[in-house]
Every structure is written in C-alpha cells, then in structure tokens.
Length: 428
Image (cartoon, rainbow, N blue to C red; front, side, top):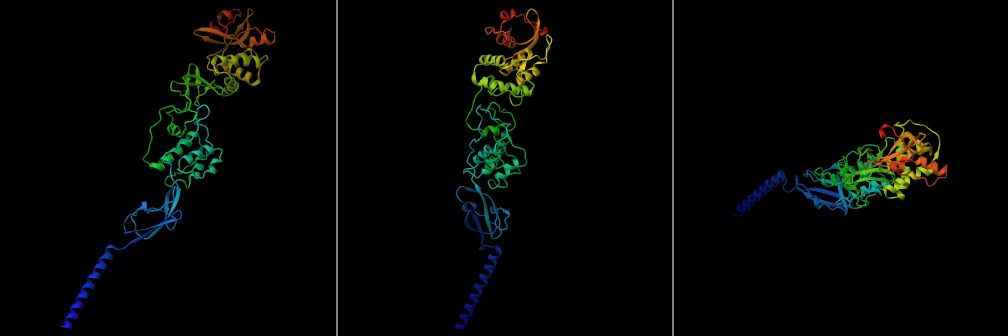
C-alpha cells in the first residue's frame, strides 16, 4: 500500500514537473514574463521604465527639468535615437535639452520714429537677438548674436544650435547680411515650425502694418507679425516730407512704391526721385531742417525760397535759350553742391526743393525785363493760373541794390506783368 502511494506521488510530481516545464517553455517562447529595462537621463534626473518587447514606453512618465524641452534623445553611442518607438532591447537614453518654446511669440521688432518697418535695411544683432528671445518661454543665452553689427543666415543658424532640435533647424546658409524682412521671415517660420510642425500657415496680411511695407510683398506677413505696437503712425492721403524725403501715401496710408503720381516718380523705397540720386540726397539734406522747423506746406515752400535766396552767391555759369529744357537737374546739383551759380542755378535749386516738398514746380528759361535779358525762374500753377517765383532776381535786388522791399515770391499775372517775363512756346 505504501509503495503504491509513493508511486502515485512520484507520478503526480512528474506530471506537475512536466506541466511546469511545458509552461516555462511556452512562456519563454511567448516572452510573457520578459521585461526590457529602459533608462532615460534628462538634466541630471534619471527615469527607469520597464516594458514588454514590442511595447511603446510611456514618454510622459519621463521626468524633465522645469522649463526645458527635449530637442532629441541620444543612445549609448551618442547617436540620435527614437525611444518612443516599440522597444526591442534594454537601452539607456540621454536627452539633449533646450528651452521651452513660448506659447505665442511676442512681437519683437520695432518700427522707427516715423513708423517705418524698414524692410530692406540690414537687421542688427541686437534686434535679431530680441527675435530669438521671443521664441522661447525663458531667455536663452544670445550674447554673441547681440554683439553683431549685422547677421547672416549662417550666423543665425549657429546661434540657434542647442535651442532648436536638429529636425527643427534647417541648414541656414548664406554669408550676406540679413534684411529686416528676411530675418523676420526666418525667425517667424522657425518658431511656427517648431511649435506646430510642418502643418502650419497664416493668412496673408492685407492691412498696412507700416507705410513702407507693401502688404502684397512676399514676406510682408511675417514681418508684420513681428512688428511691435510702438510708433504705429497712420499717414493721411497725400504728400509727406519725412526727414527731407518726399513720400506719397494712398488712402490706406501706404506709401507709393515704384510708381508715379501727378508727375512725381517714386522708387522702391517709397521716396520721390528726381532721376538723379545725387540731387535727391542734396535736396533731402537741405529740406530736413526746414521740415523740422515748419509744419505747413506753404510755410516750408517759403522757407525753401528764402534758403536759396539767402545762402548762395552769384557766379556766372551756363546760359540757355528761351524754351530750352533738360538743364534743370545738372544746374540744381551744381548750385546745391557748390553754393554758387547764376539765375538758372538759383531757379533749378528752388525748383528741386519745391518738388521735394510736393509742389509741381517747373524751372524755365526765357527772358526778363523790357530789354529781354536771358533769365531763369520758376513757375507753378494755381487752378490754371500761372504763378512766378524769381529767387535770383529778388536776391540781386536785396543784396546788390539794397532794395529789400522787393518781393518776387508767388507773383500772380498782375504782379509778374511789370517784369515782362517771356517764355518759350510751351508756356505761351
């Protein structure tokens, strides 16, 4: 009896052992109890996770330092890795950390005192450093960038290393200084791509963010988004002289660029151009203090007339036949640069300044007096009525003849008649 019991016990144990071995084999085959160990190090903190083979680790459980975000994970060999993929083996990862992105980018680029965006001017390192700081929730170290006078795309890329992930930072190439338009476009697109990935976009801005920024220009929307709310000026429709330069604002307050208005041509920067860059600079230099002192157009015109009358000396130069044209630009440059000239130079100088103030002036060659002396002067029209401005002849009466009561400014036909001005056929 005892022997039979032992045999039964041995048989039962053998069956249990066999079942255990079979179960162990099944477990080994399926990996039901196999665990993988994953280690995540980030800023001095280490998080350990255990997962089944093929399981995706819970990355939200990984502890990160406050105010930091993971730019990328590196494996034991220092290669960029993707630990959020299904696990296949034990592994240890180290985080490359950067500052957290700002929830929204605060506008960071200032307009100038006239409200201009200055899209084509080079951006300074200090301005661009402000843009980089606006991308992040905390202030990153950008002192090297801040010290630069101008910044190229390559230099911006180097400044952003360690702040953006390699996948967020495309190859920024180019050694030419960035303009404000280009720099704002880069900073804005880098921030939006880092925040939202590739699936982001913004509607084009069809409002005037600055008088010198065409809303339809490529990149204008990004620059408008970066401009802060200071020095926002709205210009009324018409001519405006700013720092000596003439602009024309439309009914939206946008300066006319690369266009013509009422016989005045404006370049891509919105400034009126006579066709001579040298003359334009001389005119702006002369008009800047006048426009600073006087606000009304008529006051400025009178001041420009007196400036020419009282600040130049007579010197014999070229003479022109009645009705001659094409001399005005050169004679204006001569007078404004040398401060000496004859009646044609006086006329051309006042003509250039008057047009720089938005007055449709013309400098003409003809004769004056009953002896028909060759002479140059300026005319304008008031509702079809010709008005004469003779700055050189007034200068001569004031300073050479002592006739300080002579006033040849803004002479309507009745006043001009006694001087017997003779024009070419164009003005008959």
